Image 1 (spheres, rainbow, N blue to C red):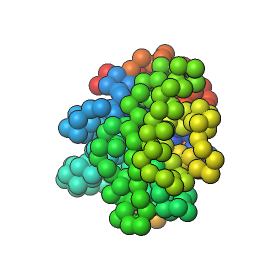
Image 2: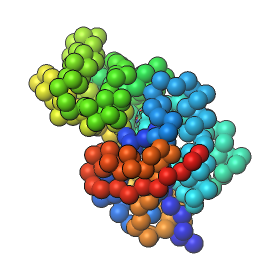
Image 3: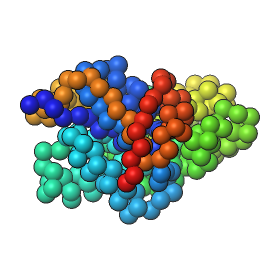
Image 4: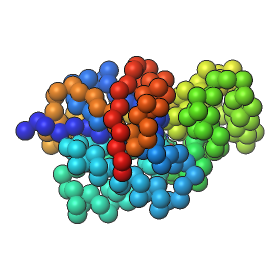
Length: 273
Ligand code: DGL
């Protein structure tokens, strides 16, 4: 029976930049997007908190009929994915799958660097976890991974201040802190699904010859590949081509700001977790 949906999860809006890339690649499936706006941002929360919040949201998506959930959030992928995959799924949900955004990005990173020096910009949580260093070096031990956290960026973006003049200081400061750590970085990964909204500002301060890499298309390609290799999951997915948006925050605010991330208008439902 093809009646399952694909769940897309983020702490708030960021996952919409990934969802936006997934739809053109896989338009036939039924999707439920859940943003935990009421408890976002996740970037500064402890491991335990991010794990508990993420698990709540994933289990809610499972209960809505999602047999596959994508954590379209680096912070949740860094802090909660492994525990959910290892400790929750095998016992409670053996037929369900949860995938993240870090591994698929690490797998292709070598295609974007010649100098083998990659900069990673992310939340404090993602940077502290060192997940990118670990995942990239497992596959490509010769690539040097240099990280910088950008704690002011998500609040600027979530308040729609990111393209205003006041944002320039924080954009330039974090970028420069990263570049000052080592010479020769030729690829900067935006390792937070919110950050693609800052690309116009980042480009103004980016030295020539550095590629700015966001994850939407990478995750979409990886999901497409995963589904082609896993007929036991794909064969249960509904082909109803639907999109449902749910937020634990205020749906009016979500619809206004979310459409900036998604690039199209959104009509969301509220959920009290
Ligand atoms: N979008 C999330 C990420 O990719 C971070 C936002 C937050 O701090 O909640 O890491």
